Amino acid sequence: HYALWAGGIQHKDPSLDNLMVRVVSGRPGKEDVLYGVMNDWDLATLSKRPSPHAFDITGTAPFMALELLNEPGGTIVRRYRHDLESMIWILSWVFIL
Image 1 (cartoon, rainbow, N blue to C red):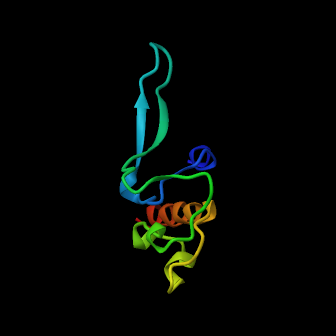
Image 2: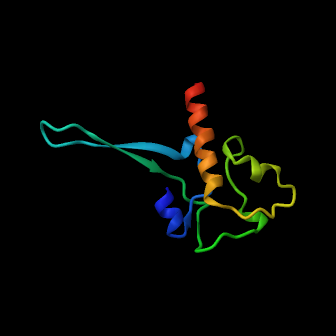
Image 3: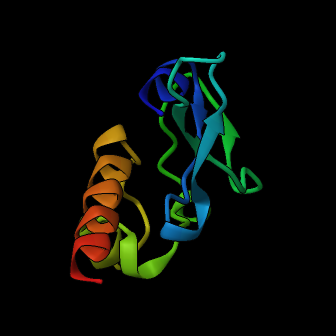
């Protein structure tokens, strides 16, 4: 996720429904390999710099960063830490269930 963000591709909607695990079968005698996968890239943007526009403040409300939810005018510049906070909220949700 961070490598894509650093490359200018911003997912902008991390949620429990958008995270999956891909299982790749190993060779005989080897263990399977698990990969984390993000899907649902319809809200993603390609940008080398953050954009302060209100229409960029998207996401699944229960998992959005508090700073984005509390900004009345939608003028917050979206940073990687906002998606990271979303991932922490998702992890908390998984442990509660």
